[in-house]
Image (cartoon, rainbow, N blue to C red; front, side, top):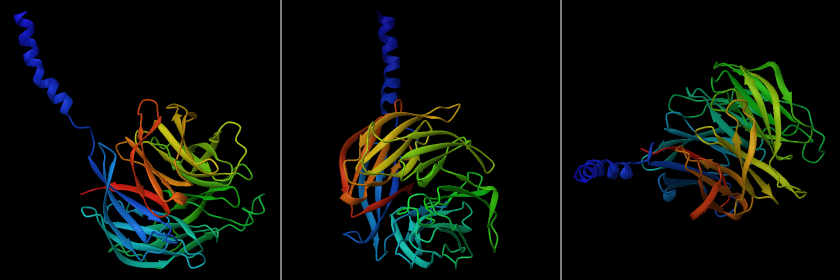
Length: 379
């Protein structure tokens, strides 16, 4: 009995330490929120995110930024870039970013070389920004100066095709411009022509993008390709379609794509209006989520087969608002945050890391027309 008590006394401090041990990864991040400024929103908002509890606290905002509907953060965390989705007069804005205070400072803006820019990405070396111009059906390249400012655009690529839906696909409508993990390629989607384009990328002063061979893959007619993500192992591409609300899974190898699965994320038997929106992985790559709008307004979760990359649905839950345009998963993989564009609301979900299921927790934000969420490191 005495030996047993001594053993318990020796183990007790270790047990207490194990209970108090903090979760792996940083405990705080910054969450940047892009919006449409046609309602009560005035620009871009920055909140501090507490990764252990899922709590959000206001830090800062910058107003006078017209329709910053999509954002990207430079790899050095010192600059933020936003499209200005203003019809024919599409522009792109650059900002200095103080991650400690969550403060944005305007640097400059340039033409997006097209109409209604809706997506922007930047290479890791911060040499070029890539912009998808939806209404003009083009992808544009804008160089980035050493001070983070944007230079005049140097290249624009456009497709003159159309799709089978006369109302939505009367012309090309480019929706994304995503760099491959090795940054040798830029992939961009065209909702209007049902194509996923592949271009070679090499940083240069003129025409950094050239068509790959083959230059595109065809998507199911009328599906309307929208956003895409790469798997963690870089072997697969996952494409979400807006009009069909499907996820297309491709094997990927050095710029070449081969489709292997197409899976719907509509509720069983659903016949109403739908519009797929955003698609994101958990940091560990085990689960993939997709949002759906209009009459569905939900988030669907998929488990990812580690060997084949194929998907199996594991969850479907309401977004508790109208038109979940975007969502983001915190870098520790504990929480998923949803932006409901047409109900001015942002909700927080806890992720079950074993099953992929989502559980809404207490707390929300009232933000006018939230349409883009980006996590970045807090300093």
